[in-house]
Image 1: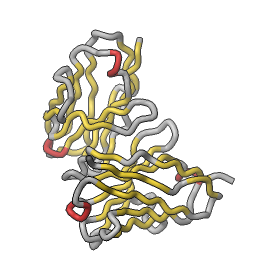
Image 2: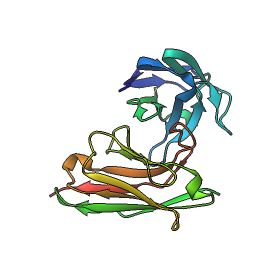
Image 3: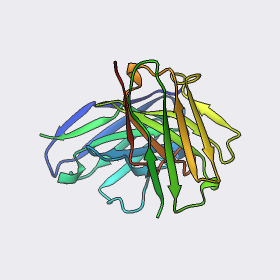
Image 4: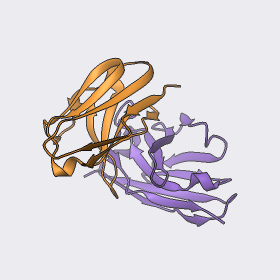
Length: 104
Length: 118
């Protein structure tokens, strides 16, 4: 069974700063099936990235995904106030533990 | 517009049962696998179970295998989760989702809270 480890657990940043979130897999993955979600309090998760690097419809281009094999990254180039949320990576039946991006 | 409207949930004692329902609309239901995902209070997402288009293939995560049963009724455009032998640690918000390929979930139900407590 694949384990996805997200780091850091919490990222404290200010609006306008760059956020770099990591998702590490316990074994090599097909990047085609690596997804990133954003979840805000009281809301359902929203797909940001699929296929490791393809933005979902309507997702701003400040969000980008990269990586292959066992190491994947979600980057938010300049944080907007609405980006403070929890982010999850997922592959098949496994979700990572999440990274909370909070306002510093 | 794709809609997944959930019902069921509530408070139940340990060892009890609950049945969750998810009514789908806005798409051809029997073209899609369906999945249940849960989220314990303040915790992350956990994939629970999925079911293929005609209900002939079902998969469960180990922690619910033998206790939870996923099913679907394509005539009613609905998917269900029967939860038996509930434990305190099953307390969570449960979401039904549409599988848009390789367990990619663009569409989620609104979630329903199941609380297991004495």
